[in-house]
Length: 60
Image (cartoon, rainbow, N blue to C red; front, side, top):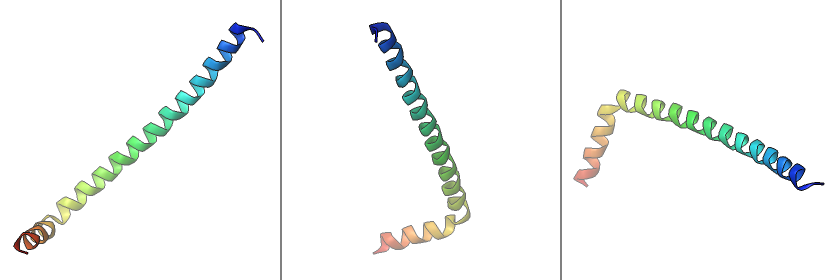
């Protein structure tokens, strides 16, 4: 196998790994975004309970 064909093959393998890594990262970012939205919604809904629990912890 010539040097050029080996370099082309290595470049193709690298491109495939990079594409897989980027796809995995974009899925993780989407999951983080959804989780942060859910956490924010829970904080809005249960704000009074969270505040009361924190005040209770401070009084200990």
